[in-house]
Image (tube, rainbow, N blue to C red; front, side):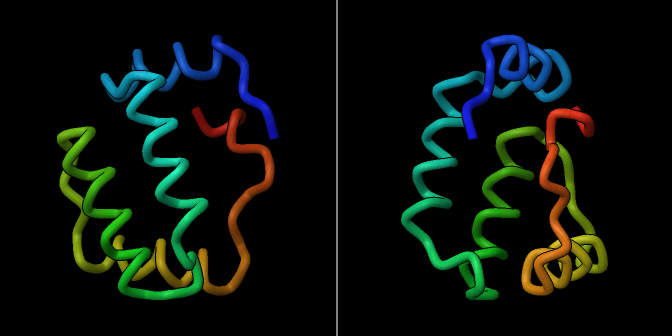
Length: 80
């Protein structure tokens, strides 16, 4: 899935995270096992740190459950 520069611009405006950081995180995600709970926790914490937004333990678990159960939306652009 290819993302346009406008997608990255939207993300940066909302999160202050630039395209290079996003691509670096994407590489980490691609190289990691996204069905491994520890990997998911690490990624969630990295994103939380990057964006300066705290993620509660409950929300972290909900994200992990969503990913582990393959309930992630396919069209992320609509959520940005």
